[in-house]
Image (cartoon, rainbow, N blue to C red):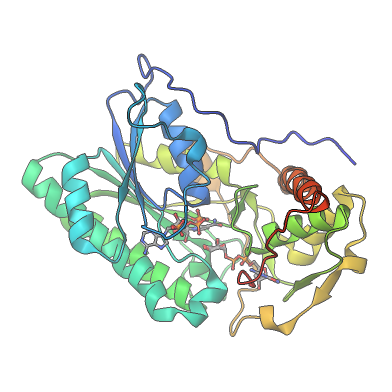
Length: 373
Ligand code: NAP
Ligand code: F7E
C-alpha cells in the first residue's frame, strides 16, 4: 500500500488568539455548519481569526461530529465558534439569528444535498434548498436596510445545475439544464442570489462548485460509499459494495481546497459567480478502481450492480473549467483525485480497523441499515 499525504484528521481544538489574524473582529454566519463543507469552512475561518456562528438543527441524537474538535465549551476563554439552533425552513428564526449575530459574511451551505434522495423528497428539498436560500437572502436584505451594515453573502450553487450538459467543459456562461428536484431547487436559489445582487445591490455571490469530497463526506455519496467499503473489505468486515451507474463522469476535488475559494469570493470588492472545479473528469468506475487499487484489492471482485441506485434522470458528464477563478482570484485546486482517493481510503481503513477491534472484542456495532443510497 502506498503512503498518502493525508490531510484528513481534524485538528485538535486550540483557543488560538485572534490577535494579528486577518479576520480578527469579523463575524461569519454559516448554515450547514455540521456538514462536510461547513466543518472545513468553520476551521478555515477560525484559523483566520473570525468569530464563527453556526446554525444547527435540533436533533434527537448528536449531529455535530464533524465540528466537535473545534467547539469549545462556552465557559472556556477563547472559543470563537458559537452554535445556534435554527432551520432553513424557519424564516423568523433566520431573521432573528442574522439580527442577533450581525455577521459581516453569511455562507449559505445548508441543504438536503443528496440528489437521489431529492427524487424521494422533492418538496422538502425545494423547501430547504430554494425557499431556504430565499428566506436567508430576505433576512440579510432586511437586516442591511435596517442596520446600514453591509453583509457579504455566499450561495452554495452546484454543478448539478448544468445537468444534461449543453457545453463541455462547463463555465460560468454555460446554460443550465437541471435533471433532479435538487438541481431545480439549486437553480432557484442561484437566480434568487443573482436577483438580490442586481435588485438591491447586495454583495451576493454564487460558487458553482463541482463535486468535492473528503474523509468527512457523507457516507451515502458514491466516493465515500466506495472508500468506506474498501476499508471494511480490506479488514474482512464485508465482501461487496453495491453501486448503480458506473459510467457517469464527475470532476472530483477536495473539499478543503474548495472552502478557501468560498472565502476568497467574499473578499473581492465586487460580488460575482465562479466555477470551482479541477478541470479533470473520471468515471465512477475509475474512481472505484483507484480506491480499490490503493488498498491492494480488485474492484472487479468486490463491486456489484444494484439497479436501486440508478436515478430517474442521470447527469452523465460534469467537467468544470475553473479558468475564471484562477484568472481573477488566483485560486487553483491543490489536490489531485488520486491524492483525494488515497486520503479517503487511508482514513476509512483506520475506521474499519477500529470497528474490527471492537467487534472482535465482542461489542455489537450497527451496520449501515437505513443509510442505503
Ligand atoms: P452536507 O454534508 O450534506 O451538509 C448539509 C448541511 O445542511 C448539514 O449541516 C445539514 O444539517 C444542513 N441542513 C440540511 N437541511 C437543513 C435545514 N432544513 N435547515 C438547516 N440546515 C440544514 O453537504 P456538503 O457536501 O457540505 O455541501 C454543502 C453545500 O454545498 C450544500 O448546499 C450542497 O448542496 C452544496 N454543494 C455541495 C457539493 C459537494 O460536492 N459536496 C457540490 C456543490 C454544491 P445536518 O447535519 O443536521 O443534516
Ligand atoms: O453521485 C453515481 C450516481 O451521490 C455521483 C452532491 O454533493 O455533487 C453531489 O451529487 C455519481 C452519480 O453525487 C451510486 O448515479 C453510482 O452519477 O456521489 P453522488 P452527485 O449526485 O454528483 C453535486 C455537485 C452536488 O451538488 C450534490 O449536493 O455516482 N452512483 N452508484 C452512485 N451514487 C450514489 N450516491 N450511490 C451509489 O451507489
